[in-house]
Length: 195
Image 1 (cartoon, rainbow, N blue to C red):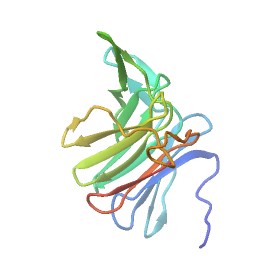
Image 2 (cartoon, rainbow, N blue to C red):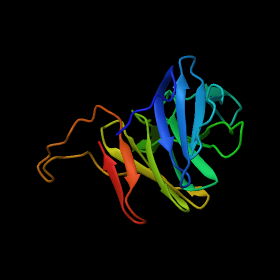
Image 3 (cartoon, rainbow, N blue to C red):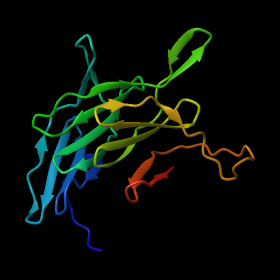
């Protein structure tokens, strides 16, 4: 294995390969800017700033995106980038064109108490994987459960709980999760999720 310096002052990197022979790296600069660098068979291209990533609310207010992002691609012409708002909302951006569109709010999981629904937010950065026509996103909920949502076609699903990870299923021995999740696709119908 040969290590190669890709750049200085780049934090929280996430890489995605939208097509054979292409690698796209997203990272944050010390200023908070989202930077993009691509590698083709000819080598690394220039580092390009995409500006400070912001999400736009329905009322037009801009809110910053947390530092750690996730990216995936199930289409050679599209990269999906996911993040989290400071309040725990799931955010989504399609990095197809430059400048990219602002992140869109996908919402957050909610708890219902009586007739009142209360958004509870995500507690960590998302993980994502994709195949043609589908994106799967995983994140941690407030009580430590792993939440799952997906985009199939043009509609996002709601959040489904996959439960709290356990070393010994059925024995109530849950595992407190302290780090980020990581997801990958293992064929068309299988995924792996690492905690």
